[in-house]
Length: 148
View 1 (cartoon, rainbow, N blue to C red):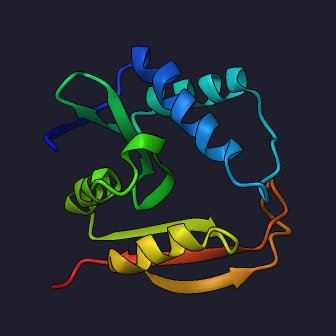
View 2 (tube, rainbow, N blue to C red; view 1 turned 135 degrees about the horizontal axis):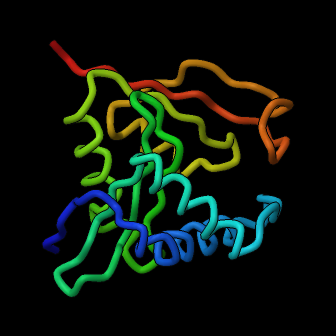
View 3 (cartoon, rainbow, N blue to C red; view 1 turned 180 degrees about the horizontal axis):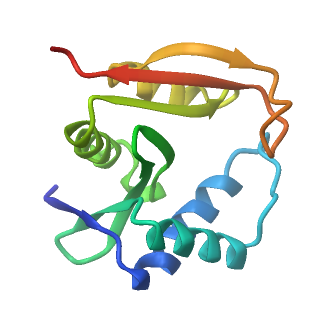
């Protein structure tokens, strides 16, 4: 699969929000806190801040995106049909090329994400009971550092 990683444009907000909404609605353990419209508004804000890079297929479809504020990954989502085909890896590699260190949160129940990040060189930094996140779900903090 050939894909291009590029900065998101304001016109991408609806497309990346659709990916986010689908992914957040898939796990039965995850509470539904936001509507699709709220996801579009949120993604628009992330794009306006300059945090979002998208993976675009040869046909121009957005296959996934990453939102990064400096060393903090705020979001990484891949469209359902594209999962397992290297889109997430490509987005992470793009982020790793920009900084020497990355950190992120994922839920303890999201074992697939944990396996993915560990496979990509992230290590667990700490676990919490979720009292401080919006979903109130136990989470895991991961970190990655470039090798000298």
